[in-house]
Image (cartoon, rainbow, N blue to C red; front, side, top):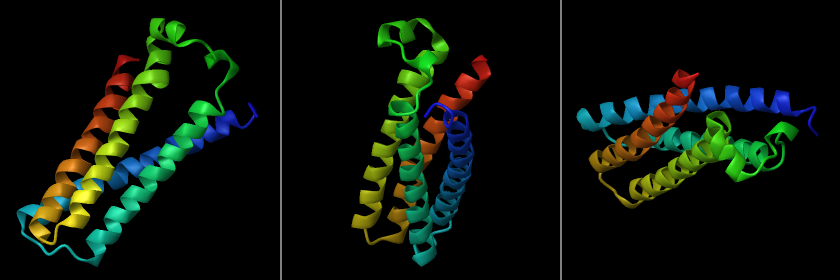
Length: 147
């Protein structure tokens, strides 16, 4: 099982980049739709669904990595992980941030579905998906800058 870890992690990283590009795209698209008072149509609805499906798949890949495909060197206690910033980030901070992002996107999607006004749909999409995108970029970006 440990032989597939390097390939799976690479796939997760590539998939995460695709998801991040989609997240940035939907955030910009939502801002434009909100500011230009566009109608929230079938394309916008499909774009939101694609964003959420990619988010759930990325979450599933991360959960598989986190719980089932850990490298033997990473099988240490939480107390030990707190001493090493690299392990702490991946074991605790990254997982916590991404779970918060998923919850935030679910709440945003509920608001989008429950309103009939296009202006508000774009506003909710921009706020909730935008904050989620910002959390992802800041979280992973700050970790990358520390290295």
